[in-house]
Amino acid sequence: MNLHFTQAEFAERIAVARQRMSEQALDGVLLFKQESMYYLSGYDTDGFVLFQALFLGLDGGLILVTRSADRVQAAYTSIIDDVRIWIDSQDENPGNDVRDMLQSQGMRGKRIGVEYDAYGLSARRGQMLEAALNGFCETVDASDLVRRQRLVKSPAELDYLRRSGAICQAVQEEAVALSVPGAFEGDIRSAMHRVVWSRDGDTPAHVWPMGSGPSALLVRYKSGARHIGENDQVFHEFAAAYRHYHAALTFALVTGKASEAHHAMFDVCHEALQACKEALRSGRTVGDVFQSHRRAFIAGGFGDSYLNVCGYTMGAMFPPTWMEDPLIRQGDPQVLEPGMTFFMHMLMVDRESGHMMALGEQAIVTDGACEPITHALDALVVN
Image 1 (cartoon, rainbow, N blue to C red):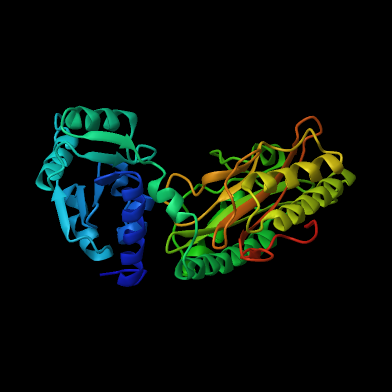
Image 2 (cartoon, helix red, strand yellow; image 1 turned 90 degrees about the vertical axis):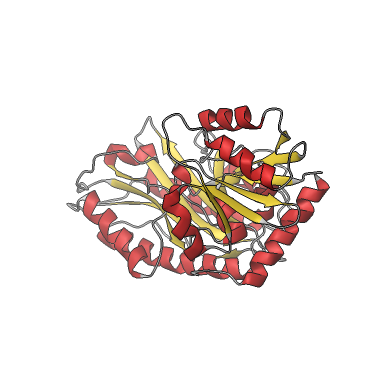
């Protein structure tokens, strides 16, 4: 098997999940997030784009219901011994196969948690599952059961995050060096990805936002690349992944000559990032981190420019995104604990003047000051 964690660590994760299930009076849980499957068993696949489910019983048993294409994948990457195959058919409802699996485990009439909030369980697939389980067992929403458990990372997970942070730092160096007048965005993006893959990293779970000139203000990916101009602004946001654990950075630079506005915007983003890092402490809340960002923007004269989210937690993530709850937003009550990790991004967009600025890094919550695992630029870069 190609496992990235010890059998003992998987056993501990399953034991904690069983305890959480018991507290919620669940006899079992059906998991549809690839992140949950990877966390509890090591199962590593992109097959979640089609129907599959992992059942965790209160006794700790794992059963995977998937397509034949993933049978070998499960054997190679996971601790799952029991794999049930549903047969592809235009009229087949794989929820019936899930019901048959549950029947084999004596789950008729039992209380079963379902991880509804999952990209692998579309609304249509959810309806198919409900149709199959209607009258067979009681189903309840258990979307947060494993997600909340995953928030605090183990020492082994933190080591993977630090490794991804080192790769991400090398990506930033490449991006800064190559973002010069005349450079083609596609060539820059290609070189940045090559840094990740050459260091045994994974394909990131999210398409990297990147833009220059007018498209720098989008802070989202869009199709179509351009050449960087002589007097331009360039936006980068990217993450590296190692064993699927993600670490991110963001920044904006200018070519030619930086305007007073760009310098002022960078200074405020830098102050806001420092304030967020100071607030990222055990015992504080995610909402406290957002308020630190908001206050810094207002104090710097950019009270109309801050976004309603300034970051999010990150860990082992699969496409289509590396973002995961909790997002860093106003009033979020999640209490910070050692072992949590957050990417904090300061994004400032002035659509009237056409200026933008970005600065961000990722850090681990500790018992004291946070531990940055990526390091933002400490000065505005002018290429």
